[in-house]
Length: 471
Image 1 (cartoon, one colour):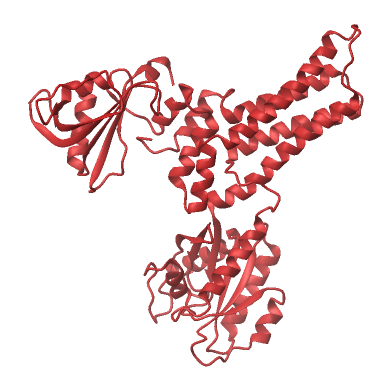
Image 2 (image 1 turned 120 degrees about the vertical axis):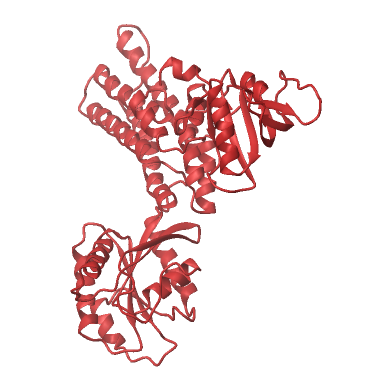
């Protein structure tokens, strides 16, 4: 973002488009107040103190060219520097109709404001020093939080918990670098320098702290992205009924006709604080219909990508050729897949007389849990969710902190870890302080990338392009 763009006054609709009680048009930049003066008329003949901050005024948005009244609004004035962007901000609370919002936006742009880019308000908050880059990325985590727990972790990030950990690490590295530099520059002086053992203690402590953050990444990704659980089985086994029961609404079509579900359907549900990406699939069977064949192909592909497989069998019927084909196929995919996954075998329709050979099923999957359920009656669905929760907890490292660390931050941590690892190896090989200092300093630079002290414009643009316009 060039200097001209940074100095622009930006404007955007900051609420979802559609009919609602309130819609907000937000402006940020030096021209926000002058534009507001031209388009806002107080409802009473009162004089507005435009030098004041954090004041709300009731009145009308008016087109300055035609004099036409656009909407009855609440106007909020916020003076720099105590604002989200550390710039002057004006927020116009309109009625939530699309026409009024767009007309208000258009008038602001006609008077010199520029339509904000995705995430530009938060980007300005970062560029103006109100928050660091890790905190800015936490804003996106808050917007995209799928459960209350993931929201709490995102708020921890916005409050600066990850940034504080990085700051502590940087201080430790800088302290070590000061000792190394002193030894390099004053080696002939009668000064007591750090011993090799103490240097290794410093490096090991830094290495361990970075490792701890990398462990936190694994847990954080589960809270951020969720765990993929796919429901598979033959046609009419009750997959869509289970899917609807778990998402608690009629999301998938349920009929007695085989092959009703022809594509994967996905919803996110909350299982004990973890987002679970639940996927319903087409019934697995030999088919000739091209559309249904594609659905079956996608179902097998989804099994390979899933973290948890819910294999569903009809407990009211004997195992047939189709069932055995599915059992063999799932067994093969689980044992030969690249991605490690867990399996729960579900015996459905236990509200009917059971005819299935459970021992035969266990012979295919002797170590996996077998749960008897009724998708339509709700039998044992809480037990199923508890089992799913336990499988998710296995993926969470018990020693890791609860922090949301994204892929960009993880990559920077990995590079920092590699640099510190090289320094440890160099120390053990007896390399001089000059070489150790290069690796340690490189590790410091990678940590600075996390908080945005060292970051390229291209990477910065890519980060904020994931935000919505108006945030």
